[in-house]
Each structure stands twice: as structure tokens, then as C-alpha cells.
Length: 271
Image 1 (tube, rainbow, N blue to C red):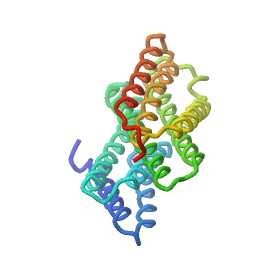
Image 2: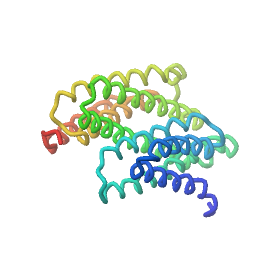
Image 3: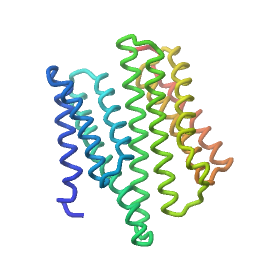
Image 4: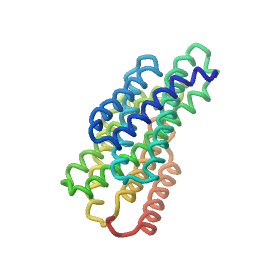
């Protein structure tokens, strides 16, 4: 791919970087820069996927999570590095969207010669969703602790983010499976809302339990991420008719091991 072809990823990311800087450093322009951030996120996804609306869910989720986590940081060198890091991730997000949605169309024309690109696009999408879940959960819980918000607000916010994350992933999983002619069960794969609601409800209950523990926002983000990663792997295999006892047990063992490690290494104090 020519360097000029990457401009459609680089230019929006530069604007994303500038707006993130304005949002954090300029009080007078914070609301305008926030609006600009969401506009550039939506329009970029719409542009790089040639006028598709589904990818907007991913960029809006990532932008929301990036802003919320940024609010938990102080004005220091780490905050500056985080803005650069989130801008680079936004570039990767756009590349992942372009690879997945454009290659899905190309595969139908090229007799599946570019399946690896489609698969890498799916993996990039999946990685950004998981990263967004960690950032958003940590950011929301950090604000909950800092401003003493009612617990139902943090439960509702994280539950909604999990709902849309699952809705997006189940949908692109169906599109990928259909394109590559993997094992499909139409009924299972078309009930996206049910699985999304189920995951959101479980996350809501999990946050409610966590709210009783004296842990910080990073610990909460790690717990939510471990939960989602493990149970999403189980759901993905179920949707592809590839679920086995080994898959279930291995993911449950990973979840329990991750939670144990997080609790053992975490500082049991809210800071």
C-alpha cells in the first residue's frame, strides 16, 4: 500500500490528537473539542469503510473510553504520553475497520484470496474493543470514586458499554463467519441483542459486587476486562458451533486465575 493511502488513517488521528490536547488543556474549548472528538470519530469510521454505520459503534466506544480514562490522569508527563498512545490506537482502529469491512467486500470478488487480511481486521477490531472496555471501566470507576457518584450510575454506564461492545462484536463475528463460510447457526447469530443484554446485565451485577470492595479504578478495569475476555471467547465459539468442554474450562480457569492474580497483587485501598 502506498504512503498516500495511509493518509486517510493518519489525518483523522492527527485531528484526534489535537482535540484530545485541547480537551484536557483548554477549559474554554473543552466542550467544543469534545464535540469535535466525537464528530471526527464518527466521520472517520464512516469514511474509511465507505459509508457504513456499524463501524461508528467502535470509534465512538474507543473515543468515550479514551476521554474517560484521560479524566482520571493528572497534568503530568504520563498524561501527555497517554494522549499520544490513544491517538496511535485510533489509527490502528481505523486500519482495523478498513481491513475488515473493505476486505469482506473484496473476498466476495476475489474468491477468498485475502482471508488473512479479513482475519487480521477482525482481530484488530476485537483488540480495540477489549482495550476500550478496560479504559472505559477504569475511567468510569475513577470518576465514581473521585466525585462520589451514586453507585447505580457507574453500574448503568459500564453495563451500557458492555452492551454495545457485545452487540458490535457479535455482529462482526457473524459477518466474518458468513464471508468465510464457517459453521453458522442463523438463529444463534441473529439474536445479537439478547447476548448483548445478557453480558450487560452480568457486568452490571459484577460492578455492584465490586463497589463493596476497597479497590482502585485500575483494579476494577482489569477485573471487567478479564470477565469480558473470558466469556466473549466462550460466546464466540458457541456462535460458530465450535464450543467444547475444553474451551469452556480453559476460559473459566483463565478467568479465575486472572481474578486471583489481580486480587493478590492489588493494593487493597482506594487511591
